[in-house]
Length: 204
Image (cartoon, rainbow, N blue to C red; front, top):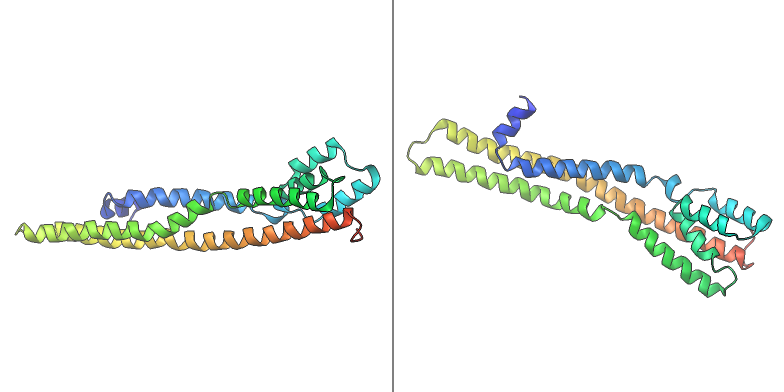
């Protein structure tokens, strides 16, 4: 059976699920690309920052370059802008930048989680529509096999497609949530190391 035939058999409720699947697929691809570890928290960035600090100190060019480098770079830049301030001030500026970076990492995850949650409900909606068609055919007194078959198709195809959309959406939503949490912890640890090194509490 061709895709067009399946869509035709499933009836108009399937279009909501098709739209949800397109949005879900686009968000999954975008997050897979955006949440790569080396783009968020480059492993060698802290060593590079410490090396440049020791050689040239903090400069506007360095801060600009860091801010454009990655979310971790933006956090480092926020802290280094206050390098001459007390340690607590530097930590506060890093924490503020960290919260902003964490918010950016969570972009689109709410939408993906919503799709994962509502897709089975959209499938159930299609199932109800199919059942209504079936009972409508019986009440008409004709009991047309074609109408009964169409009602069953609407019910079953929508239920199945709702699960097909929901399952991968939920899997990737959970995966991305875990990834964001791990990256947030990694960036926090790197930022603490930078503060301690700058204030002489740790050797670079």
